[in-house]
Length: 275
Image 1 (cartoon, rainbow, N blue to C red):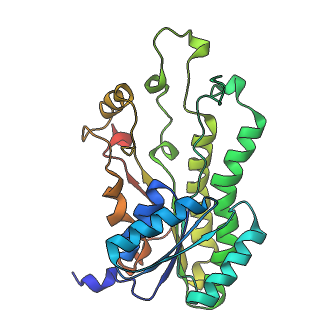
Image 2 (tube, rainbow, N blue to C red):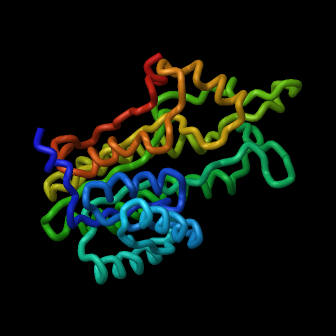
């Protein structure tokens, strides 16, 4: 195989949620093939930390901007800065999301559907799904407008394909109606991103802007031993993913190696969703 099909030399890749664990990994994946990753996040300190780590790994200083994916105005300001510094955006990775918690700061469980706050629903959807829409609107329109095309990658989840197994979150000694669960917004956002992927894949097809989704499975990130032990029993490979194990998939989806892939959802979950 001609390895040059993975080359992204000279390309600019915008990554939302760039201050997070996987935001760094996505940036490292495209940087390895010559792209310039641009990290967007509301967390300035997290951006700086990930940029420092990228600089250590690749010997190059990359770019980051504080941006609110829920604000089209914020994104347009950042978009203009990127165009001035680096030229056009070639790839957008929609990675930003809230991580809905089982309990609030007082320890009260609000994860169950009966108790789930309307405000939490609105915030989770506006960041995870609305943010992808706003970023596609700003950056995707630019890709489509100059005739050069581009690629959009939406980071979904295996829980955008299957329902969460709520048994994983059970706490010994609690009554059924008190048991914590995976919040509804996580499933709705991730299923919605797959739907948005299909829509975008056919919306700008004549302008050579393709869109695909990546649905990762669980990633080791300091979860408690009981949860991990129970989860890996549901995965044919018998383990969760290491944080860097999605780099190859990201490089594939962002480069010409996948230039005939459009509207697809690449499920990479160790086999969990097929068992």
